[in-house]
Length: 289
Ligand code: GLN
Image 1 (cartoon, rainbow, N blue to C red):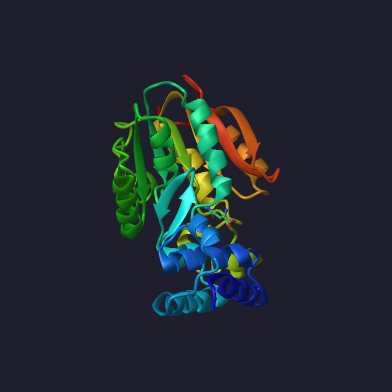
Image 2 (image 1 turned 90 degrees about the vertical axis):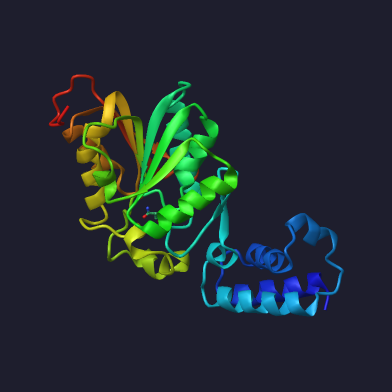
């Protein structure tokens, strides 16, 4: 059977299994099995599929038809043009989160500064920012030691040197008040425990702890809003990714904690996705500084 024929059959199978991106999934998995890129596949589609690679492809296809995320099967995902290794210990980087990177870059336009990324996972946000701002020092923190090891591996593989990853529970890996940042960013867990999306698609296979939070998904967002002030320089910004129905609640939390210039940004789909606020200089909003 030719590669083209194999691909067409695989795409049909994934479509029947309910994959929302069946043709693309089939192409990505076949490339992975063959060890080639998609340009090669488009050029040489009339070749016969070698037996060993074909068996490898069939195994990947069966796992995908059973719902396994493509990023876990191939072990990688592109984010901000960076090829990141992924693992079932972390959330899969999503295009929505590039909105957070964009906003952080706009606010962090100066040549030097310090950025903190909380719940860094694969290191996606930290690495994207660090790659664009070589004069900045970036710190990424994650509760999961496996995530920290993966993020370090990604930094090494991409040769991004101005970033450091630590294991810890949010701010616990930092010395209280001794380390301050011009930008603090996070894509924390923000999905409510009873959200039906958790039973669909990739989310079924991703770590629960990276997705789900108490208080209808708002508990960690609120915690970060309150705690971050002690780690921001005066005039520094906190930027948080959140669900599309959480913009108002996050803005309220930011305002109540004394942040200024509070706003919400939309993602490419037009949904509220990132809220931000500025540590008011000499502000009195209940912070410790
Ligand atoms: N944006 C992801 C989703 O809804 C969830 C990410 C998160 O909880 N931080 O699929």
